[in-house]
Image (cartoon, rainbow, N blue to C red):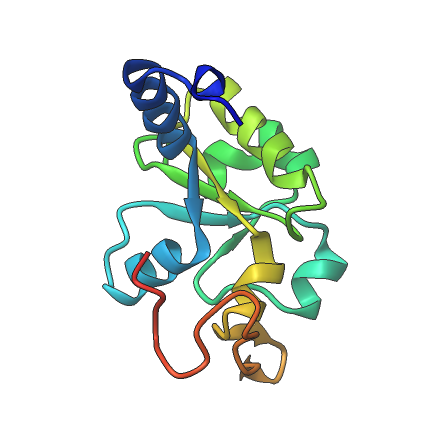
Length: 149
């Protein structure tokens, strides 16, 4: 790898600043939710069957195909939105984020989706209560609350 293949610092600052303005990770979302006032509305953009299987506690359910017609009734347009779907192999959150942006919402995508939420050992709400799986050592520290990244 040659140094000519690296972006100059100003280009890197612009890129990563823009990226952080559009994406957030599950650890940051969990910490914000745990604070009691996250400063955003968390929206699960999956279908009802997926929501019923388990979702992030405190999330609003709004399938991405219904964002355009139902967002204003469910989500305060003055409040930023963080959306999630299944995981990194799914574009549902990106499609939902696009719909929210088209409606004038400030929006970010939670990278990793519900998959990484579960893999990091965070609780998932189901019909029987909140369930928690052990942290996956490939995605999160097993003996700590956060990776401090």
